[in-house]
Image (cartoon, rainbow, N blue to C red; front, side, top):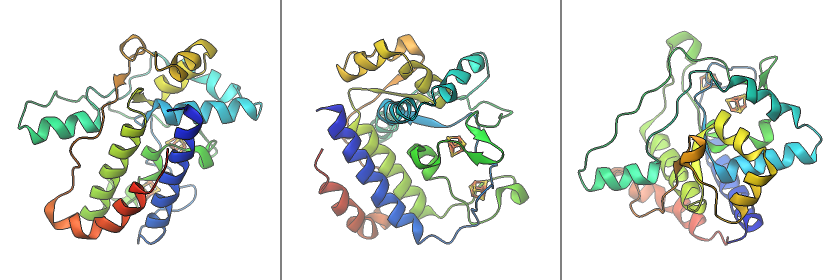
Length: 227
Ligand code: SF4
Ligand code: SF4
């Protein structure tokens, strides 16, 4: 599938999610940035879209600055969401994850605002809390929204199943290289070489039984997307 078509499908997925999240009762507001850290994950499709837009807008410096952060401690996932779903469904051993602490602010944050807000990946779009995280020290999200977020992560990974996932710092740096962008377009990007993990096709949807009926209208919209 061509990357352009995949990006069109990604935009539609974001749109469906934004319509869903508009109705959430959350404490999130502009310039609230405790959730903007160096632990943001995304797929290569999302990274490809972000880098492409920034380059076209004459803002390559936003990406170039990430090279200085290569030594920064950050969360680098061991297993993708779809792979995790399969392992859990098979009752198999799940590799341990090592979340990076303490967290540093996201390098794309400037004056308490996201410099790529309209382009931000799903990992940022789905971060909500019913209470201000600064007061509680953690995000508080209802179970159904957490299930919706997982399904959307799975669908986006499936769309980019020939690609990789990883930390925002790693993914954007890799895709800032024209050679790597071409490798990605040709389905030839080597995930491991770049500290990324392989994406996996969606085989098992992680939806708890009590959320299946309520989730159906969203699934119906996602099924209609033509990529
Ligand atoms: S998730 Fe927490 S830190 Fe992020 S915008 Fe919402 S309340 Fe603020
Ligand atoms: S990309 Fe933007 S929204 Fe996402 S963590 Fe960084 S500053 Fe926050």
